[in-house]
Length: 419
Image 1 (cartoon, one colour):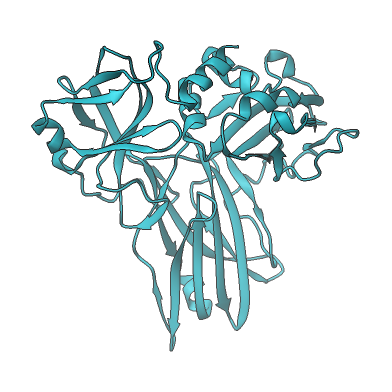
Image 2: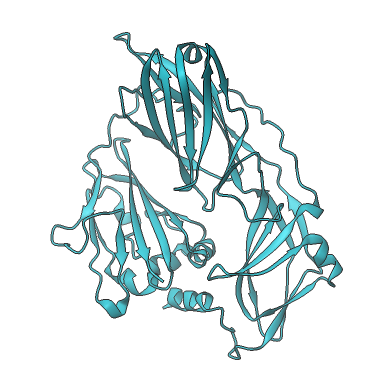
């Protein structure tokens, strides 16, 4: 099995040609860094990007990891030049991370932009691997929070906007109320986006007119090298009730805007008024006779030696499938490297790329044009047990479905693999 071979190769960092004690050489004689300064503005506010101080070559540090996420070597750009432009490494597969920082990219931090690139490399015993030009770009999504004046005049107590891209690593943008004066956090937050596309959760808590208010909204399509300008606004319903909402990407520009998650009385602003309402009854659940699990967010994969996994799911799409994609997040470096080899972390199940066949060997999602128009889709993932057991960590599969009526739903499945 091709994928099993690739993953076995990467997980143990063994030699490609037999002898586990021989070394190879990584040559930097042709190595150079190019910088992509592109920063996509995602905002309904304006079309200009704020400037970011760009790094110089001397700012870059190289981190070499094996595919079990162990740091093998850390060396500066300048040290490489001084060392004869070559490093000796045990033959095997590695992930080279080039960063404009002396430390790994923080999951979330204020005013800490990091440019970089992830480059899979293979070292063969007795041979030289030459690294060429690496193009580095901002590895984070830049996020700022602003407020409209009408909202600020209604604030009567402290508040905070919380932004989270990687689960467990939020940033809080404080809104401080002091005797009628309101001060907001003006710094930019930088959020690491380790996959091609991710989601962002924005939560706003505030005291307005003496009442606690809360709004939560989720956005998909979050990518590195984006600038998401978030503006919180006051909305008055036809009934005269005030509520809070968020402007970030007009609905015309952001097709992947997900519905808000109401906590108090909330509305969604910025959606297309002519767009279909609701999720069209799109669901994903366990098959009726699959009793091994009862929570899509907590699927613990047993070791093959502990017994057989029964993981069968059924997707119901009453309006018929028009689009079905899967966005994969993972805490496993080896799994992420395999995804990179397979064309990235976002899979189009209906029109998959040829390279994606590697991923389907690990997680056998149904795929192909025959999914178009289907109203019931069976996901028999039992065969995923053996290959995915090679990748300890948490793997989240965000199933994004659009039906023929334009209704959308995103359902996430988390598989947990122990050491």
